[in-house]
Image 1 (cartoon, rainbow, N blue to C red):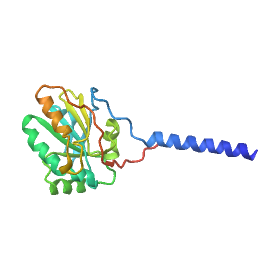
Image 2 (image 1 turned 30 degrees about the horizontal axis):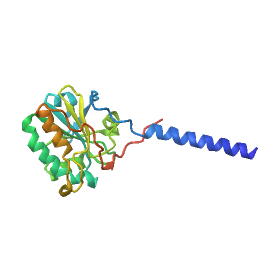
Image 3 (image 1 turned 135 degrees about the vertical axis):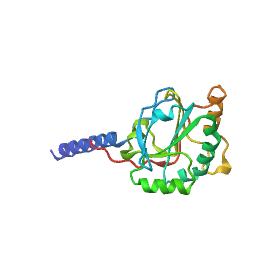
Image 4 (image 1 turned 120 degrees about the horizontal axis):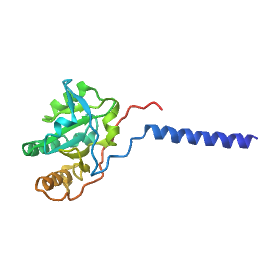
Length: 201
C-alpha cells in the first residue's frame, strides 16, 4: 500500500512540474516569413507607440535589450552605430525592454548614458516578449513594411567586437536594401535570459 502511495505521489509531482513549466516557459519564436504580432508600448517619456508607426519605414529592426545584462551592454555602441548607418536608408530601430526588474527610470538613464538615438519601449509583464517568443537580450526581429519577419537572431557572432567574423544583421539589411536574397534568415541569439513575470495558471 505504501509503495502504491509513493508511486502515485511521484506521478502527481512530475505532472505538477510539467504543468508549471508549460505555464511559465516562453512561447516559441515567430517564424521567419510569418507576420509579426502588433503591439503598443510606451517609451521612457510615457508616449505610446504602436508597431504600425514604425512599419511606415522600409524595414523595422526590433531589438530586445536590457540595462543590466552585460552581454546586451556590450552591444550598446554597435546598436548606436547600426542606427546611425541605416536610419538614413529608411530603416527604423526600436529597443524593447521586457525585464521585470528594470524600471522606466533606469531605462531612461541607461539610454541617455549610452547615447541611444533610437527609442526604447517598456514591455511591462513581458507581453510583447511572449508574443514574439523572445528569450534573451540582445535578440533581433527584422520586419518589412507589411510586418513580415525577414530575419531573427543575433546582431553578429561575437560578444567581443574584435572577434566578429559574421555581421549577420548588417549583412541582412544590405541584402534587403539591394533587393537580394537574405544570406541567412535565422541565427541563434545569445545573451542574458529575459527575466519574466510569473504568469498565473
